[in-house]
Length: 315
Image (cartoon, rainbow, N blue to C red; front, top):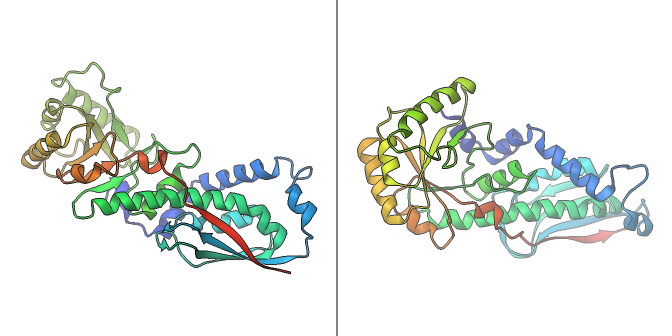
């Protein structure tokens, strides 16, 4: 199975652990801790909490989804607790990928009040941002559920948060595209600038062979086209040279023609649509028969889900 397809098949808890095994999640959390608590922990701390809250006070606090949506980021809680607290526990009530209703408690935290308060903002930033991505993705996925197409993310992610935002896309029912430049090949317009359709197959054939030599386990090889002439040229290549052709900024009528050409000449080749995809346009795109639709809006234009931490008991 292609590595990217194997990744898509993982249950969400296993996917999170696979992505977190890169060390990127822990590095991001460490950076977040440095942002709030300072880089010299002996000389800095949560000054407001230290001034207001005795270390002996303990509390129970509810993490609440003030607006309804699909949750994501709760898998980060054990790592956040480890970075920010020594004695706080969390019970997750609504798991990643599940929908929370308005004002529903999604997790309960218990422990020293000062530690809960120090953790609060960073936890809300993570869960709010990632749940916003998951909620947006679910809306896109639901809009095309009646078709064969699946919605995918892109590399248009927040710097430092890519693996988490891609995890959140999966929580919302979408697919992860390539993780970065290292795991798959996407030959785009700038890579083939000045190359005529006649010369395109030769370039792709050579590039594919070189890429597989450099990385035998790469996820896939994909080529972007913006014309049917380029697609026709690529369809002359032997099966297996490339896995996906990306139809860039084509109107639906051209996509339908592209799908018909693919079906007739290379039925195992996947077609992906991309370029300016919105919630208003994705249904028409999916109904052309393409297999994948990549949408940068899933990560670059998303609003955070409104989540809050309410201290219920403190003694």
